[in-house]
Length: 375
Image 1 (tube, rainbow, N blue to C red):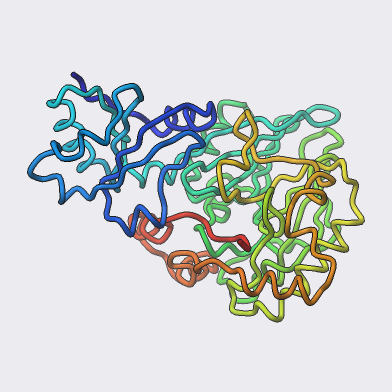
Image 2: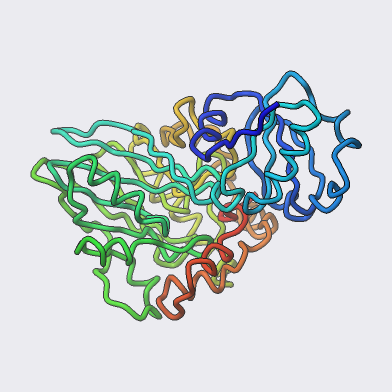
């Protein structure tokens, strides 16, 4: 039988298509428990590579013969060796090209809508980490929101679309992943926008995002309106695009709400979080399509792979928007915080411009899932 490689793009198609897949993860148990390839109809077996050095005979009884088999490790090498051993036992096997590091970095562009008077809005789904970024295109220009550090993927997409990136925005100072905003702006000559209340310690120049800031993209009537919505950070800012879409950053997700503690100020910021969710957002049209900066689980994705839902639906279904009493809300938020993101303090330092790690160091900082939501 043969060993074949499966790219992150091919794996994403299986996730979005709700395909069945048997995943043999040969990383250590703690790494697997913390973070794995996720699919609605995936089955898993975790056996560390070092336990398979003498052969795979002991695990053959656990591996189905009627499903695609994917072997996964951190960087690829171990999964190729295990896949070869399984192949020698007569199984048809895939290994994940580039391992979990490649899976963490892959971005899948999904069109989420057409804009009035021309223009398009795309969501870039970082399936392996649950991060979401956006590209707005209108009349030959583009704006990017919450860029991942893999800026080459936005540059390639803009080139293929024949547009020039003119504006780059971060909804807040990120703590779970390294922003590509500054780098993207430097490479394109675009204006880099950041909420000033999140930027008091940054070491670089930026354009300050303030409440009700209007930025035009292209020659059409596509306006981006900034909406101050603190709570995840003190400067968190949402965006109203074309009076149709609401980019919520890390304040509101499809099935959860943002955590207020990543700067160590949960008790101080939980009130801001409630004000943003229960007052500022309540005043907006329920027909707005919410586009968050993260998703927590593939169960939140739509059939096309996007994470998007009407604001009115979220007020009906999202548990974080259904807590009437403020004291109960404070308790819900402060007592249901997940573990801190991996290396979040260092990531904040990078995003402030205070440290400049090498590429491999950046990859190590981002290992693991995002943990921006209250559970």
